[in-house]
Image (cartoon, rainbow, N blue to C red):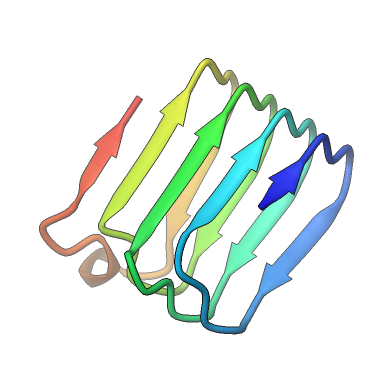
Length: 84
């Protein structure tokens, strides 16, 4: 879980169950480790970059603005969902 982060860069390389990002501003998140549920939830964030080098089947982004989502390869989205 990432909460209230400002102007920072994070790199997640370990296995985890799920990713939560909330109330972050001006941050870059690099997801490289396996996410077991293949789910990332983003809430009330601004001007953040989410860079995915691992499978993310569901990306849920709520009440956020000026966000960038980049997959390293099309296959990492699979048959997933992007919910804005």
